[in-house]
Length: 225
Image 1 (tube, rainbow, N blue to C red):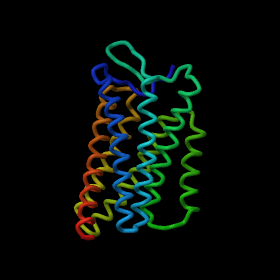
Image 2: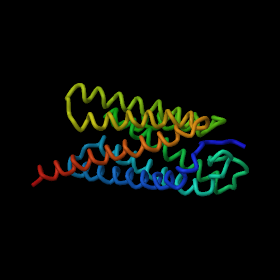
Image 3: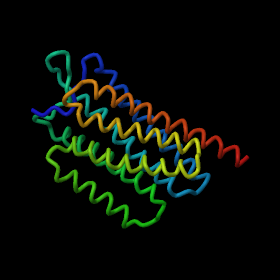
């Protein structure tokens, strides 16, 4: 038996709602970014949108997968458990991992502001290779996520330090929250609080991004008028 995450009984149901909410928010971020791209023709924002579209698909898959993976444990806990999984459950977990990592790699590639397919291929290929050879894929995914998200957060920090743009600062803060969110998931097999904290930080981070993109969209819309 392998526990992926420990979930306090009182948080069960709420966490599923937050997973679906996160999926909706990330897809809304993707749509907003694509709309900005159509206004500006900025290739990095297009990649930003595509990255979040993949992440949104990943969260949608994971939300449905949780319904079949969560089992009751002792002492008021529930757990997401990998034990004698059926084929469709295994495929669901792998699909979640692939879309999530591909989304983060796409976001990382967007920070480079270059147009070289080889670089994207290398980033994605190496990331998926790490996942393929890993024995504990969920922990590896969280570690790899922390690495990629910290790189993205640092990029937006340097951008903000250079131009002191308020929206850039918000994006930096959002990605920094996602770093802590994924970092806490690494230890969620040992404490129920890390799972709750992770989900809370995640929703806050994506809401900050969505609000920032909506403001940018409105600002660009006024410019066109």
